[in-house]
Length: 156
Image 1 (cartoon, helix red, strand yellow):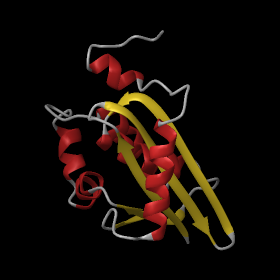
Image 2 (image 1 turned 90 degrees about the vertical axis):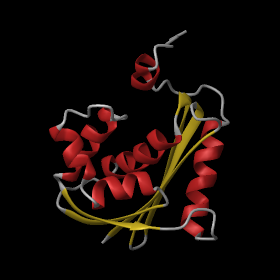
Image 3 (image 1 turned 30 degrees about the vertical axis):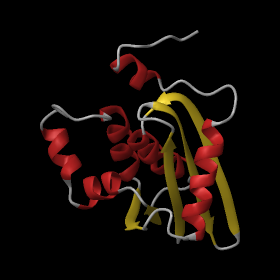
Image 4 (image 1 turned 60 degrees about the vertical axis):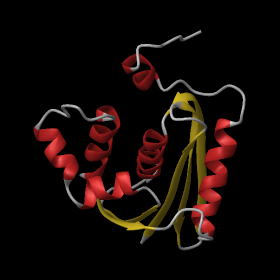
């Protein structure tokens, strides 16, 4: 059993943002994080799940993902995302990330558990700390899809 704890954060929406991930399986433990110069909280919440799944070394894993994002969990558990796909993501945001998640989801048995954010859940608090620290660093990554869609891309 693999556990993935995730959180995303942004300072402003849009603004600088980051994600934090903890992967845990038995005695194995790994933390991941990265910051972006301009993005949204929802993109970072979803990016955290994606990065956690991309870090798995083997396919067909039983994975439990813990997230405080109702946006992510409801879209998956209530199957909204599949309707969005059928409608070509008309009037929906984050198509690029949702398609990336859906491709990854084919390779694992994934269960989602919602946790209340900022409520003392140790792994959620750590993921929040990782996400916030990530966007406060220098040399932030460029969320090029977001910046291009918002029409304000400056790659310099």
